[in-house]
Length: 250
Image 1: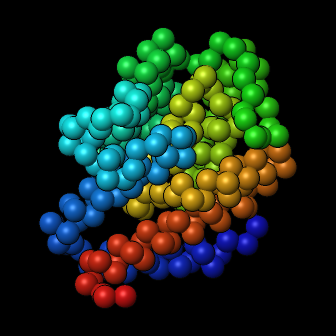
Image 2: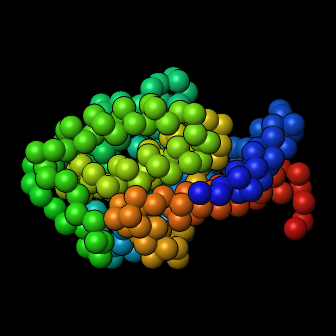
Image 3: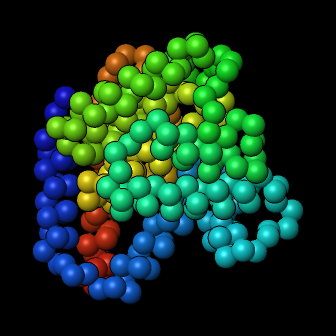
């Protein structure tokens, strides 16, 4: 796998951003708010939520959108709370654990499916459109323990690769009956943020590419496509952040 060039460019952009510190406070705050909005909107849209980005922002402000299902409103509110929790873990320099993963998932399904929120599945499932079949539900606890162990052993990898692998491996297990995609993207960005990078937001228009890359990782053990996808998104995010901070019109 040859990811030297994309990682080198990402590291260069991150280094350039570091030379600009301290960053303008208001600009950073508004950029962060915009990132969070995009993160919530795209993650929900990938899963079928029909709220537009503007409607998502309105829901975050506490307004109900007429004609839209209550579940879609909770998906916005819950995801914001889950992001807050992830950012709090980063701030506390917490090491990722199964308890943290269950807590993230609990935020995701709160008021949507309280019975299964934060609970590993007790039934077998199939993933629509995917060739990969997740492990038997009786093997989920062991698989999740192995996930945490493997994640700890991959600390030496580039943060973008480590984050992408964590996402892919988690989805391969599919430990919950619902909310796995949401949780996986939160875990990926937990790893990126704690290592000093920006969240990688997978846009809804790349949903098919995203799913195909994940299925390739699960069925062939080949992570390259997914890592390259995440690396490209991270590079784009850093470049955009720099352009805005530096006031470049291009």
